[in-house]
Amino acid sequence: MSNKHKPAGKKFWITILVTLATVVALGWMLRQVDWQQAAITWGKVPPWVWLLSGLGLAASHGLRAGRVRAEWRGQLRMGWREAWGLMVRHSAWVVLVPMRGGEAIYVWALHRQGGVPLRQAGLSLLRLRLQDMAVLAVLALALFAPFSWPWRLLLLLAMLVAAIWLLPAVWFIVQERAARRSGESGRQLPAPAWASWAYAVSNWIVKLAAIAWPLLSLLPIDFDAALKGAAGGELAAALPVQPPAGFGPYEAGVIAAVRSAADAPWSEIALAALVVHLLALAVTVGSSIVARLLGWSHRDLRRHPSGQDPA
Image (cartoon, rainbow, N blue to C red):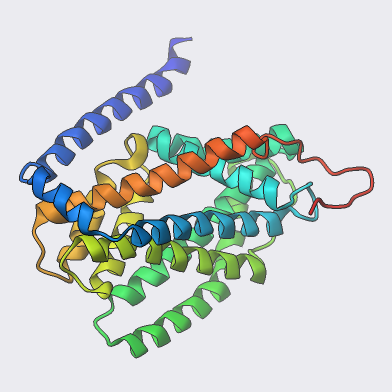
C-alpha cells in the first residue's frame, strides 16, 4: 500500500517546492517595480489595445476548437459549441493545475462524455501536443533567426513544410513505442490532417500577436521584440514542470526573449509579462466559466442515432 502512495507523495512535494521557488523568483523579478509609475503606464494604454488583445486570445480558443472539432467530427457529436466548451475547459485546467496535470481533463472528458477509449483519447492529446510544439518551435526559430523579415518568412514556410512532412513519421514511431509499453495493439491514429495544420498555425500566429500587442504598449520596444517576448513566454509555459497558473516560468521566458532583442529594464519587462499573463488567464478561466454556465463544456458527445452533427 505504501509503495502505491510514494509516486503521489513525491509529486505533491515536487509541486510544493516548484511553487515556493516560483513565488521567490517572481518576487525577485518584481523587486524593483515602481508600482505607482506602473499604474500610470497602464492608464496610458488605450482601452482598445486590451480589447483587441482579449479578442485575439478568445479567437485563439476558437481556432483550437476548430481543430478539435475537425479531429472528432466523424466520430463524436462535436459541433462548434461542444468543441469550444471542451477546449476552454481543458485550457483552464492546464493553467490552473500544477505540473500540467490538467492535461488529463481532455482525456477524461472524451472518455466520460463521448465514450472514447482512454488509449485513443490519450493518443489524440499526444498528437495535438506534438503538433503544437512543432508549430510553436518553427515560429520561434523563424522569429529569432538573425535575418530580415522577408527571409524569416521564407524560413518559416520552409520549416513548416518540413514539419508537416516529418511529423507523420515521428507520430508513427511514437505510437509504436506507446503500444509496446502498454502491451496494447489498438488501432493507430493517423497523423494530423491538413485542416488540423491550418488551425494549429493560425492559432499560434493569432495568440502570439494578441500577447505581443499589449507588450508593445507597455514597454519601449518594437513589434519584433514584442513578438519574441510572446514566443518566449509560450515556450516557457510549455515546460513539463509548472507551478499553479504558470506564474514565474512564463514571466522569465518573456524577460529572456525581450532582452535578447531590446535593452529594456528587467523589472519593467517582468511587470508587463505579469500583466499579459493575467489577461490571458482571465480570458481562459472566464471562457471556461461561460462554457460551464451554458452547459457546452459538459454535453454528451455521443452521436445521435441519425448520425448528424450539431450546427
